[in-house]
Amino acid sequence: MEDDTTPDNEQQQQINVELSDEVAEGIYSNLAMIAHSNSEFVVDFIRLMPGITKAKVKARIIMTPDHAKRLLLALKDNIEKYEKAFGKIEGGNDAPRFPLNFGGTLGEA
Image 1 (cartoon, rainbow, N blue to C red):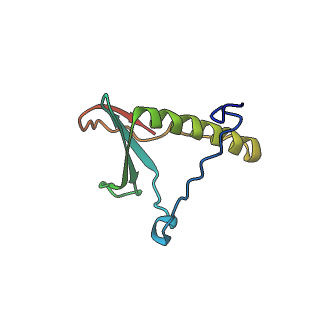
Image 2 (tube, rainbow, N blue to C red):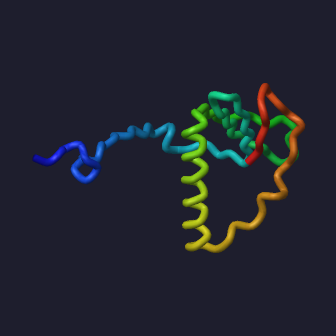
């Protein structure tokens, strides 16, 4: 008798994801600030407009370190696919630097 719990016989679990009309519109962000503690990563998506000295956080995403790593790998994979289809993405080194730290190690994207 075969063991039905082996990976070859496992059924794919299907997840239904709901996307509301409001969320589907998306939020434009041209700056992300990242902070972390030992248990979570906090990513603030910010809209920075030319000539305006005040920027607004448009969305904050909080995730576990494990999920942050999976997000990093997924972004890397998608950037590689994008560059293969459309060419190398230039830039990224001209992002503004902010001496802000809101309670943890600060990164920037």
